[in-house]
Each structure stands twice: as C-alpha cells, then as structure tokens.
Length: 163
Image (cartoon, rainbow, N blue to C red):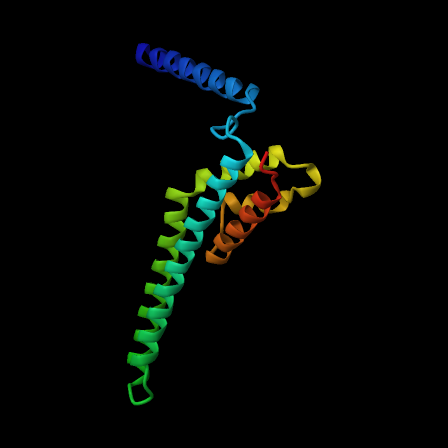
C-alpha cells in the first residue's frame, strides 16, 4: 500500500511538472525562430527546402535503380514462379527505400519544417496561409508529400519580405 501511495505522489508531481511546462509553453508564443530576421528565416527555410529536395532526389535515384535492375532480370523465359518472387523482392526493396526516406525526413527535417512553417505563418498575412497543408508537415504519407512540403515552404518563404 505504501508503494502505491509513493507512486501516486510521484505521479502527481510529474503531472504538475508537465502541466506547468505546458502552460508556460502555451503562454509564450515563441519558437527558436522568433528572434530571427525575415532574411535569416528565409535563408533557413531555403536551406531546408534544398535538403528535403536532395532527400527526394536520392529516393528517386534509388527507386529508378531498383526498377532498372528488376526490368533487366525480368524475362519471359524465366518461369512465372521465379518472376513472381523477383517482383515480390523488388516491391519489398522499393518499400524499404520509401520507408527509410520518410523516416529520414522525420528524424532530420520534421521538427524544423514544422517550426519554420509556424513562424512563417505567424509573420505572413492570413490571406497567404494555407492551413490545409499543415497536417502534411506532420505526417507526409509518401515522397510526393515531401515534395509538396518543399514546394510549399519555398513558396511561403518567397512571400515573406526581406525586412
């Protein structure tokens, strides 16, 4: 019973600390980019756009290589069972390249993309905001989503004045 009370006290203390941190964060409408100039913010966004496009290009190159290798091996004289097995292997490898690309985005660019778009939206007039694209920043479903993120981030960055 005593252990249960201790855990309950620790749980309450943890809850209070978490809630205090959340309320402190909610009252401050600032990100790590809040104190940067528009010019610096645009440069950071353009750098991220370049990195995301590089990631997409890398995926496209690997995917084309896998397709070319599959096409080279896939011959009519090969029995159907072997061709099915080769197709299954190609699909698995292609899926792995796709998944690793999305994982790399999430691990390396995800948080910066969200923080940058939030800061850019904070500085832009409401008429330039496309809030329907925000969920894609958090959960891109495929590599085309990554391209959309890069294009959108570039577009809204260009809309921001330098001063």
